[in-house]
Image 1 (cartoon, rainbow, N blue to C red):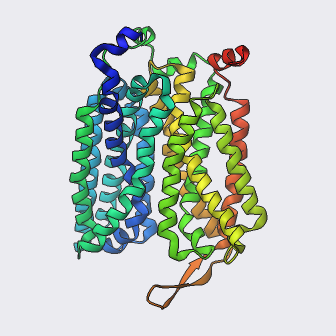
Image 2 (image 1 turned 135 degrees about the vertical axis):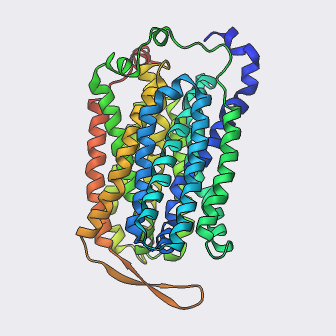
Image 3 (image 1 turned 90 degrees about the vertical axis):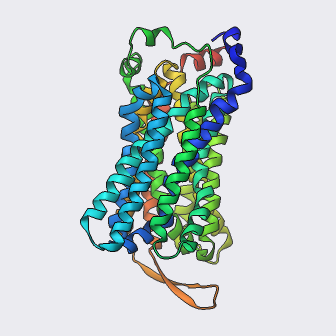
Length: 455
């Protein structure tokens, strides 16, 4: 796109309104899917099912996020207004439907119909809204911010990560103040709020004037054709390292609260959860902006995996989770691991679209990005479940005391050895991902030329 085309319609003055703001409105709404842990126990208690039974709703939401992104990527590619409207309707309808089935479950506790309804609404319908909403602004951002594509996508995806930190206290306040049935009332209220936010984002979102799809797209070259135009091992490597990063991140993040309790910080769980969410969002923005300065964006993944391996290895060697209570150094190491994994987890997301555009161009980037997000869907089914299985099979549950604000003491059941065993699995996977980075994902022609020129 030439200078003349760039300035048509004053696009430089509109890029925040036409790309950044709508991206944040969309991603800050759908990112609240990660607030699940705030209200999952309340849902289980209200409808008369175990927490483990309701947990599948979150797993299904992440799975259908990935699958809808993979199968609807072409819709996003052709018409961002249609896809962003689909996202707003499905996400809000899924939330409202979840609220209705929670309400019904309160009247008919233990009804399997309620559980299936929540799976469909929170998992499937909201999942479609998540996938299309996640994809819709990404290509548009990269078009508006041509020279800082990483910063642009990082900004939007940071909104997805920051949504948890922003929405968690709001949701907790609603639960505390809405009285009887507050859990379903919260969903109905937020369905309206998020629909308004996403609909405004849908109205504002627009590609820059003068943008023309590359010639290859006009010839009808599909996403898989573009992927196969280069060695397929290259794409498989990107998919695998993305999948592994999410799986490891979810494995640790799903046990984060219990790990924090193990090291004697039960009273600070909420604060640490918020700080880790900030690191998650900061990693999305920071790592992607940093990658803009690198010759090869794949270098950022190497850094993420190396940092994760080092911190995981140190906590394993020192037995930080098992021995951390009362030891300031070990507590700092465990918290450091939690924060680094959260930052790397977020950074892995924000760098995927720009890494793919470097390798495969912008013509079919929404469709290719959508296919790649299928890794997120599968990781959503495996990450949490892998960690839960390891904790249930290894180590021994123990009870620890936690002093409450009113002076009483409550007993908390934890499994420090089990959480340590989760780290053995994640460090192996991180090492595998690092090997994939070096062996399967090759530098782009642009990166090789820049290296050769010494730029």
